[in-house]
Image 1: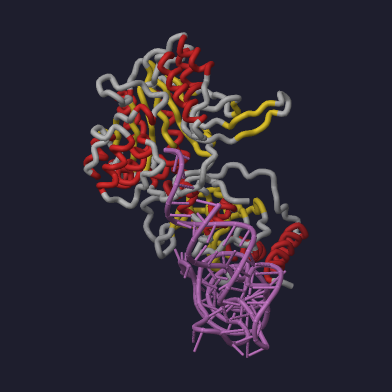
Image 2: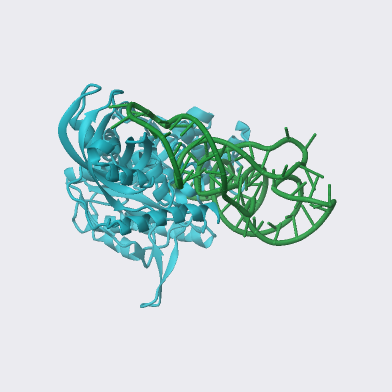
Length: 485
RNA sequence: GCCCUUGUAGCUCAACUGGCAGAGCAGCGGACUCUUAAUCCGAAGGUUCCAGGUUCGAUUCCUGGCGGGGGCACCA
C-alpha cells in the first residue's frame, strides 16, 4: 500500500471509530465561539503561572500537538491567530483525554476551556470539553515549513491559507483595504453603482477584451475592460458622484503586475478636475493604508504626495525633453543619442516611445507615492485638453512601490472632440492597433446631452494592496490567480 | 508567443563524475502531567512529472510532451 493511501486510510479509520463511539464527526453548528484574538485580549498582562476562572469557547483547526502522556498541549488556529490548549487526564477524564489526542492534525474542533498562563508565560485554555466540528480526511501541509510550493499555493489556496499565517494576514488586509476605500467614498457622498460586466461594446481603456457569445440573442458580447463609459453616463444622468468597485477583464499576458481579471475602483465626481481628484486619491489611499495595521508603513502614504510632470520626470532621469521632441523622428533620434539599449525605437509611435521612456526610466524609480501630471493627448482618448499646455491633457497617473496604482483625468465632456478622438482611434484600429477604442456612438450622444465638468479616477485595487502590504507579485494578493489549466 | 530554469515520500528538502533513492516533519506502535519546531525508542512509507532514446546500468545524459518559476514582448 502506498504511503498516501495509508495516511488517508488511517484518517478514515478514525472517522469510523468516532462514529462507532457515537460521536458525530460532522455536526451542524457550534454557537457562541470567540475568536482566539479576543481570548488573548481578555487576558493581556497576566503573569506566568496565573490561574483564572474565565471560561471561553473557541473553534479552529488542530495545528500542533505536544503530548506528554497524561497531559498534552495542543495548538488551535482560527482566522485571528493561534491559541494553546491543555488537555489533562485528571481534569478531562482519561477516556476523553485519549480521544482528544487521537484526533488528527487538521481536524476542526471546538473547545470550552478555562484560561490560565503556563509557567513559561503562554496564555492557554485548560480543556473542560471539546467537540469535533469536522473530521479532516487529508493530511495538513508541513507544520513548520508551511506550504512553500508556489504552484500548490496558488492552485490550492485553501491549503496556503490554512498553513501560512502571512497569507491569511495578507487577505485580511486586502479585505480591510477594500472596505476602507468604500467607506471613504461613501462618507464623501459617492453612490456605489453597478454597470454591465457583459457588454455589447467594450471601451474606456486601451486593451484587448475577452469575447463571448450570448446564445439567446445570437450576439457577440465582451467582458468589460473598464467601467469608465457607463459611469460617465451616470454622471450625465445627474448622479453627480458615483463609483464602482469590481472586476475588469483584459485579454493580455500574465506578469507579476498583471492578472487577466483584476479589481478596479473607478469613481467620478462632478464639478471637480484632476487636481481635486489627486487630493481625494491621496486622502483615500492614506485612509486605506491606516487600516493595514503597519503604522510606520502607512506614514509613507501621508498626503501630500510628490508631484512631477510627466515630461519633467522623463527629462530629469534621461535628459530627454519630450516637449522639444514632439515628433516621432526627433524623439527616436534623441533616444538613440542617449545610447540606451533598453528601448528599440523602430516601429514605435511617438506616444509609445513616451510610454517606453516612462516605464523604463521613471516608473521603477517611483517608490514613494508620486503623481505624474499632464500626459500627451495621443495616450489619453478620454481626457480633457490641458487648460494651458498645448498637446497635453489634464491627466495624472499615481505610482507607488515602482508601480502604477491609479490613473485619473479631468474628463473630456466636449462631445465633438470626443467624436474626433474616437475617429482617431478607429483609424488606429484599421491600421492594426488591436487595443484601439471602438467607436461608441451611444456614449457620444450621452455627452451631447451635457456632462458637467467631472474628474474621474481609476485605482487598481490589486496593485494598491501590493503597495500597501509590500507584496511583490499580484498573485499573492489575488486568492485564485489565473494559471494555465 | 520566445528565451532561461525547474519537477524526488502527504509536506520541506538531500542524493558527488551515470553505480542499491535518503533525512526531518506528518502518519503508525510504545514511554512521558508545563510543552511550544517538545523529547526519547521502534517499525514503515517511492510510477524520482509523462513518453521515448543512449548505456551493462539513468533521479542524473539526450529528444519530445505536460506543469511551475523567472525574464522578454503586450498591458494597468
